[in-house]
Image (tube, rainbow, N blue to C red; front, top):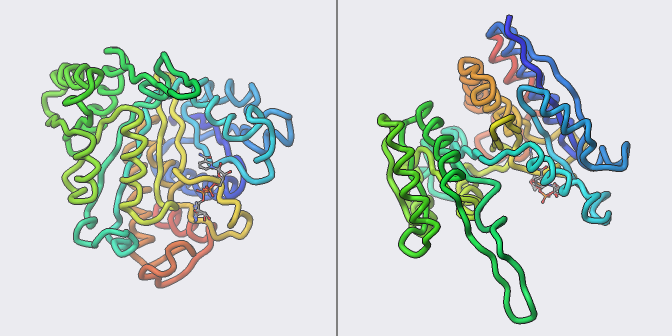
Length: 355
Ligand code: NAD
């Protein structure tokens, strides 16, 4: 029987509650699909600071690099907000991504039919949306040199090397091959030299994926098209800053932050996590929506472990729970038949897998 080692980082706030539900669902699907999962629980964030004095202990980095994938809850909270910057949970998370070398951020935006009314856009615009933003994460203007400021001037540099573009483009095309085989590459090639190199390089990589249809779109138009007709997109490939903005825009299509998963992947390992934070305002009350984390676990099975059948089963079980009208508090006003707790939602989804 195949066995995988998962680094489990629960973190702070609702982190432990939502990760427990993802583990419940993972265990159910593993039994069903004939593999086993071994979990290595690692500390990070405020809880790691409280116990070890460091928000990112060395064992967490080495433990994660030893695993097949990392499933991550959320970190942070007011209690740690006044610590020196390097001791804050959020600094630990940034360092963590850097140490693991995760260069691609994958952010799907899916609108469940059952929740079309939860979106701020009209139901007919969002019904059927299922897109994936593939964002370059460790290059571009956030990291380019030179950068700096003086009294009257501030400057940053948007740089991409051909190699950086090649590796993120391969990610996008590989993902498109598992989806609807369409990549839309986002740039500003009408103005920026860096975008011209981006466009040329993406076209070169595309030759290795003849089944995938490649189109290009300027970022300003993409921002508009995401609101006008989001269904036109399958995979959106972007650089760091454009993806930062567009992935947040895309996430609002689905209506609730409690639904959306993400992955940050690199050459060595991927980190799978909900897009939301530690939600201290609702922590410990058993009302957090675990679906974003359960869906992140599904991404982990698909992209890190190649267990596509198991991932499909989780996705179908989530859909079924929503279809039957089960809702956590955050979605209570959208066609709910029964309001359930965090743990009840996890059990319902796990049960649907077992059946
Ligand atoms: P947040 O995402 O934690 O919460 C924003 C709002 O959404 C809150 O009202 C919260 O109750 C709600 N919410 C979030 N997740 C939910 C869920 N699963 N179910 C139901 N409701 C949910 O953002 P915030 O309040 O700005 O930040 C809180 C803390 O989280 C801060 O310390 C911040 O730094 C940290 N944070 C961590 C991460 C991460 O770990 N990756 C990401 C963002 C923020």
